[in-house]
Amino acid sequence: MIHRLLAPAASFVLLLLGAVTVLAHEIGETRVALDVSGTHWTAAIVTAPSPLLNRLELDAGQRPSRDLAPESLEQRLKGSLAALADHIAVSFDGRSVDFQTTVDLDVPSDPALPTKVTIGLHGTVLANSQAISWRFDLPASRYALSFNDRVYWLDGGEESPPLPLKAEPPPTAIAIFSNMSGRDLHISSRPVRIMSCSFSG
Image 1 (cartoon, helix red, strand yellow):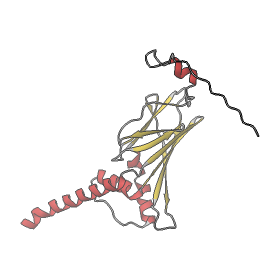
Image 2 (cartoon, one colour):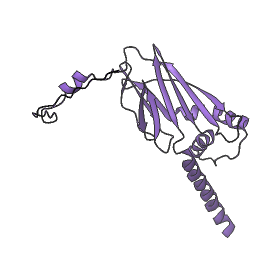
Image 3 (tube, one colour):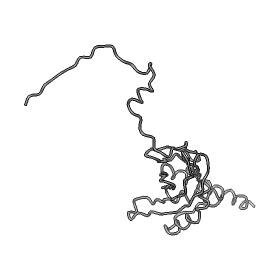
Image 4 (cartoon, one colour):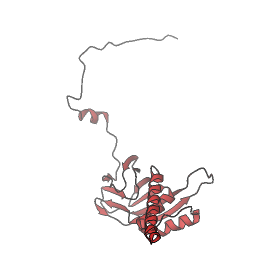
């Protein structure tokens, strides 16, 4: 009787320990590169493959897998693409769009280097769109989203601000000074001594 009562509790503890392990190994390991070119957009999610798969398994109520061979790991990730897509949202001016996904597992020849997986996404830009927004709710920690030579730090599940499709040029010196209020701009009335020097060969 006691064994029957302890078995579910033990399973829950193992599942919980697996979740903690996933979270611990995921910190700082995810980055996303977003790009828009003409009528098409692409995104590349680069992260550690095992924690990503484990997050999907935990989300489905499954026990996290361990020590998978690269072939098995890639195959399971490919089989989880539909579930993965449910955790990603891409929209143009607030209008959600569909996308296709791919998996590319990178196993370095040097065993000291970490294995990475790249989840590729691609789709079509909605006509007359001005901005794109991104959301990815699987990361348990902050991750970097790069777009138009800028980096945005997002929490898992946090939607990015609307990102203009056309890169904004850096402000000019005239624009900077024109936006400064009088109290922010301090001009000294002291005379400035001009120092001159000459050099002879």
